[in-house]
Amino acid sequence: MTKLFNSKADLESALKDRSIRRLRIGNKVLCLIKNQDSFHLVDGLCPHQKQRLDKGNLNAFGEIICPLHFYRFNLKTGREVNRLCSDLAVYPLEINQTGVFTKI
Image 1: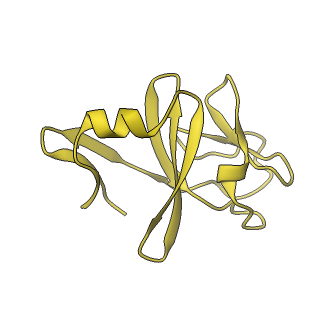
Image 2 (image 1 turned 180 degrees about the vertical axis):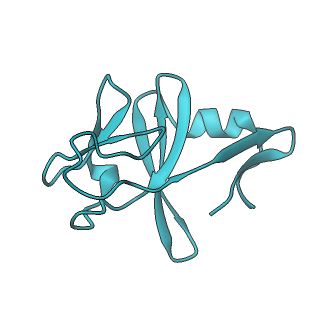
Image 3 (image 1 turned 120 degrees about the horizontal axis):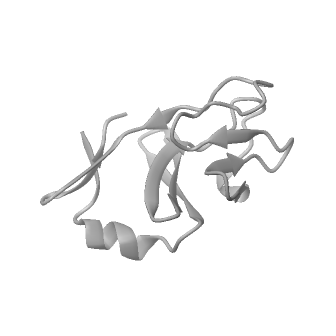
């Protein structure tokens, strides 16, 4: 497990609602997302042409949208909505008394 934040309060203060934050863990680029009071961690690059998803947008349907070709990925499942490209990897977040963690 990789520790991302020391507490849930630290996580909440790092992101405002409907925002995307780019993270690097080792050689992996990720996007930490807060959308409608839920937190998500996904690959930071679109599986189609490796565009940075932190430059994309979030919509009201719980999707992150790639800025290049506008592929839409479900934040919970990583599935590309129209099945036009590969799905996006989604990583679990574990929040407990000792911090915020993920398993990559």
